[in-house]
Figure 1 (cartoon, rainbow, N blue to C red):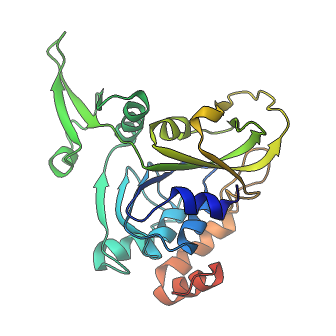
Figure 2: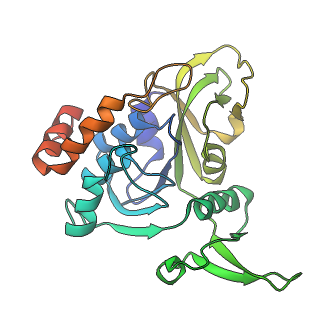
Length: 264
């Protein structure tokens, strides 16, 4: 289906939404469509929120962010995120912070149908005292105290990939993150792709999401820009640098929303 149709069907006000992708294959086009459709009260989940989450937060789509690192990679801060957190503009934002390992394990637990995951981590930090989804368990075999993190099961996960075949099987390759786990953990999933092909040719290190794990596929050429899609186009570094000035100023950001097709 089309991307607007996919977002309209799968993303609802108040949902917990994960838009995953690490360094590349970041689903910018889908995030922009969520903004255009005016979704509100979303809990956004992402290991590394960058520009697209800054944009979603600045557009007033989010009421909470669950994450492990946030920033404009290679440039600096996310200023719409900071404004929402500090000043409640355009709406107040609650945060829930984890480590990278904790977030990855939360997705794995959700994908595995388990209530929590166990890892060695968080020791010596104050995150457990501020985050109610972090706890401890005692190993029944060794007596060792380990960190435990609650599973996360998004209402909908959205990822971008290079290709899907006509049966709905999806393949992505290059630097992959937790896309597979995030899709399998979700109640619903939408995958945007660069193109539909007759047959998926196995790629080195490729991840295949079978059709039974994917609810909807939408063709969105360039759907990861300004991040990159391995084998299709490069990262637009200038866009990341330009975003710093746009995001620092509410008026400049409001004008960016108008250019996106949103009446602020």
